[in-house]
Image (tube, rainbow, N blue to C red; front, side, top):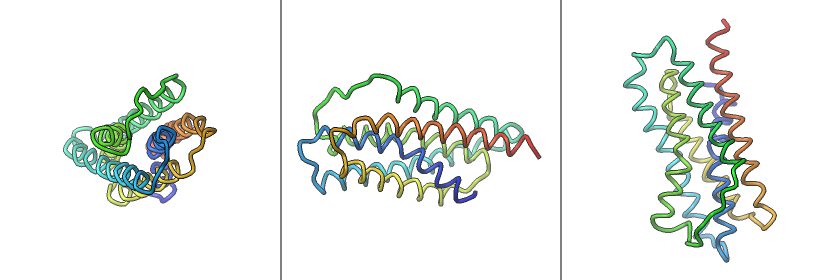
Length: 186
C-alpha cells in the first residue's frame, strides 16, 4: 500500500477523534496535560486496535468474496465517509458536562470514534493488504490530532469539528473510488 494512501486513510479516520477532542476541550473548564494524555492515548489505542480486529474478521471471509471484494471495500468506505458527512451536517449538540477523559464516557467515546477504523480494517482484509503499518499509523495520527485538538481548542474552534468530519468523510469516499478504479481499469 502506498504511503500516501496510508496517510490519507489515517487522517480521514482520525477526524472523528479530532472533532470529539475539540468538543471535549470546550467541555472542560481547564484542559490539563492529564486530560490530553488520557484522551489522546485512548483514542489512539482504540484506533489502532479496531482496524486489526476488522482485518482479522475480514480475512476469514476474503476467499468467499474474492471476485467483488473491491466493491465491498468501496461500499464500506463510502458508507463510513457518508456517515461522517451526515454527522457533520446534522445539528447535534453534546448533552453532558461530565469529564470526557474519564471512566465509561472515555471508553464510549473511544469506541464510537473508532468504529470507522473497524470498517476500514475489514475492507483492507478484502483487498489482501497487511494491516499492521496502517493500524500503527492510524493510532499515532489519531493520538497526535486528539492532543492537538485539546491543546489548541478555543471558543472559535467549535466550527472546526464539522469541517474536520467533512474533510475526513470526503477522503474516505475518494479512497473508495480509487480502489474501485484500480480494479476496474487495467
